[in-house]
Amino acid sequence: MNSKKTGLQPELPPFVPIDQVGVEERAARFRTRSIKAESKVHALRLALQMVDLTTLEGMDTPGKVRQLCHKALYPHGIDPEVPKVAAICVYPNRVRLARQILEGSGIRVASVATSFPSGMGQPNARIDEVRHAVEEGAEEIDMVISRWAFLSGEYRLVQDEIASVKEACGPSHLKVILETGELGTYDNIRRASDIAMDAGADFIKTSTGKVSPAATLPVTVVMLEAIRDFYFKTGRPVGMKPAGGIRDAKTALHYLVAVKETLGGDWLTPDRFRFGASSLANDLIMQLMKQKSGSYQSADYFSMG
Amino acid sequence: MKTRKLYIGGAFKRSESEHSYPVTDKKQEPLAHLCRSSRKDLRNAVEAARKAFGGWSARSAYNRGQILYRMAEMLEGRREPFIHELEQISLTRQQAEAETDAAIDRLVHYAGWTDKYPTLFSSVNPVAAPYFNFSIPEPCGVAGIISPEDQALIAPVSLMAPVIAGGNTCVLLTSEQMGSVACTLAEVLHSSDLPGGVVNILTGIRSELVPHLVRHLDVNVLILAADDSDMKKEIQENAHLNVKRVHIYEQKDWNKETTQSPYRIMDAQEIKTTWHPVGY
Image 1 (cartoon, rainbow over the protein chains, first blue to last red):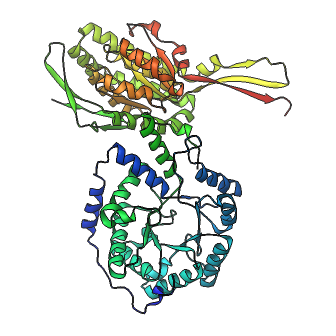
Image 2: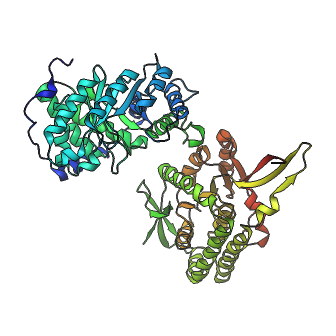
Image 3: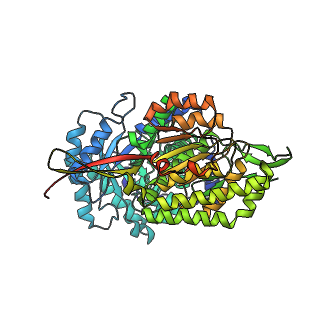
């Protein structure tokens, strides 16, 4: 799939300015859709299948990762109709363990790499980390871009870095984290999205989850529009992953509406859209149970993680 | 004419439904509009109560007592407006005075109990093994309270005070026709250092709300003080879903001092027993 070397084109993508007020208005409108019971159940199930169950903390013991993997395998415990999440997202040194547990389940293992979350490591070390994660069995790599380089105008450096990470990924999917909370403006977010896609990203992702603000709906809309324009230009579909700060089912549904109305139904699949979240899965399961039983649920009856 | 707002999570909010209904005074003259809470308002209120529970139950008993006492003080400071409102709605001047004073006293009563009831209801248990075995009361969690149709001030105060004195949080469904007094009470709570979400007050058509309250799995205690056989049936049929503690209070006159007791605090407590090995 890499034969075209899309990442090494000499020109930077053209600058596309973003209408801030327009984008925010548009995003606000996605929150006003009324989703009725049957569609809601469908959407909740879909959203759950799109979750990248994530734990990225210094305190990620093997035990904690094991627990999270079991949460991915048995989302509800009792009700087998509750669908499974798309992937588990962990640090490189937990990839092997996660792979062992999830082997054969259809749940993918994603790993962050390239000196997550700051991206301030040595360039070679960052690439080595990607190779290491891939060797350990990561099927998806979530890289961070060098925000310092982007913000000081060294777009070419950012582009080259993404391209070389893409190369190091081999067959594994590459998600590029823009860390939109640090980019400052929608113009920058659009520009970073264009550069990332141009350099070969399979997914573009909003945030690490370590910086506030993380994913917001307007930012996601900007990125979705970038994906749309890129698709029209090149015919290559790129996925989208908002991450961080999406904690409840209601918010998740707003994102699905935004995807549907910006990119169409083709993007409503875990291959092209993901949520990076940890507590979202539980809320989605709770809302599914609410729809099923008719009574509001309590967190007391759902496993943590 | 005012539309009185709901009190959810420490904020005065309109109903999500955007519906309201008119209520009248004792001469059948229009008095106010009350929000007609929807099941989503109820859900939000329970959510707010759950969120507030951790912090409130972790406060020292002494501090909870101080805050209840502060509520009594704030209520006393607004004695006249309350008497006026009660008089307007249903009572004579004398009855309104008695009810307001009883409500103030009720808060002082439970303020005093916060750091005493655990001593009274805890025990050290004799066991036939080398363990130190003791039992202490702990708050159950979120309580749903259904106030009676009359006694618009003293009933909500008498029902809510023991629940929160014991470290629980609650969602209170007010009287349908006299709910405006509880809305005024919310202003007292709001200015008493009571953390937002500890008490949530909903007005509305109760037959619409009670079924959802009873079935809500995040509500741990249900207190019904309304004389309504349909509601009673509803509760008795559905409270088992998450094994709620159900208390149905039959008394009619909440003004009486005999209605106040530390046993009311215990109605929303559960006993935790600990086995601690001896010699360590």
